[in-house]
Image (cartoon, rainbow, N blue to C red; front, side, top):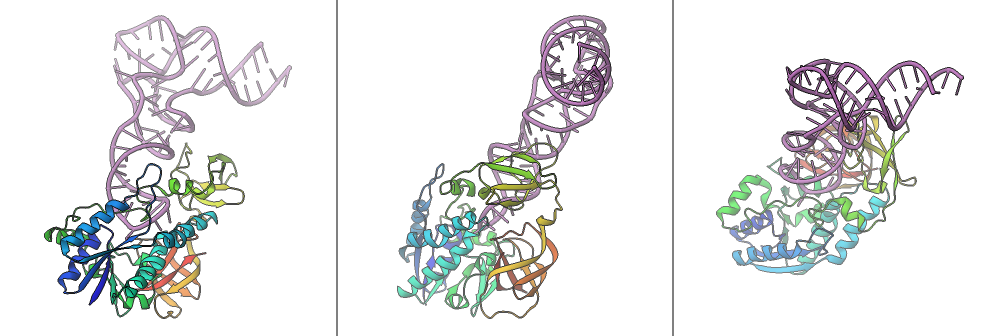
Length: 340
RNA sequence: UGGGCUGUCGCCAAGUGGUAAGGCAUCGGCUUUUGGUGCCGACAUUCGGGGGUUCGAAUCCCUCCAGCCCAG
């Protein structure tokens, strides 16, 4: 089978390519060039990543290509992210990246280029277009994949789904892949180690505003833009005294951030959630009880689905507008929606 | 101007004669392919200033300074 593997230059995608070669596929490695811009205090590692991906391809003796998605990525992912933040929400750009770039743009481009299937190093499993959690429940990445379509998954392979991360590292090492010990990437995939705040500051003007105690209504301090704060956030408020303060809301028009020291504040714990732009990977499930996940790596919890609303058995912390809730039935990832 | 109170790290705050708790914030690290959360570590040779008592004081005494409150 002719398979195009998305190779980021990390261990996971390196081993993915290696395994596919061993399985006898006709493998082509593809580096997706999504973001190349340096940011203050942070050099974009794209050139190094590309070099790493290429070296692994050479090592494996497979074809290697670079797909340039920079312009689309900028529009579909980065602009989306900035707009969402401007609207006072907290988006998840990596989910958008999977939906728009990896499993749409990359898939289409690969097929057009002659591929029969694509593959990535995600920790997830797919069977007949059905998305399932990875064997390594600690690393499972289905949360980021819930906006992919069943049709796309029909043409997708996730060779790492049955392995754990430590095993992957070991297998990479056994095969002499020089990316075997490369550190896991984290943070927004394109921003790298730079904080979201630093990144946003490049695109958004700073505007001083007040930090207000929800209970007393007193002004406790000042910030330089409500846009930089999100629900449940604790650090970066620079408020001293007594107990730690947590963000429990904000008003974009007034540019005000509301805080409290009460860990059990109502707005911090939600059990009833309205979902927006729901997406099902395959058929829409009937109303009923399912398992849901409020954020990546959050434990699965039971919830009742009624159309566009979810009633969660146990209230969840910092369920934030713009973030995604993903819905599961046993180990199957059905889809999910964005918190309204 | 009388009377009372207070002054310990950027903030809150223990400690009332035995040689400076803790929390917040901040900084560093860990966890994490989103934001965020969480975890670990660092962080006052010094207690508003100056004298004095004492083997020894942030803790007792004197004095000065600053702030607050009640009187006026």
